Image (cartoon, rainbow, N blue to C red; front, side, top):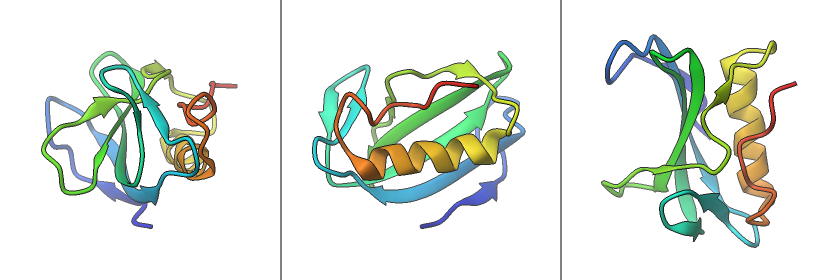
Length: 104
């Protein structure tokens, strides 16, 4: 798992985290294409709107999808904690459960 801060890659996003995960049974739910499964890459970032955005893709693919439940307010625990929680949600599987966790 690669959960390291990455430099901004678009807009004025100042912080984001990227990690590799294999989706558990049932996969991860996206807004654009529904459930995706297999080896995935998740990016969690704070963008210009001040919200936490979670995007996911098949590892090494070109297309990114919005993880259902994103964007959301940045939780008090911070972006890295949200990223780690989201990775765990995808890892545990179940399309309905593998969404961006709710902010506390």
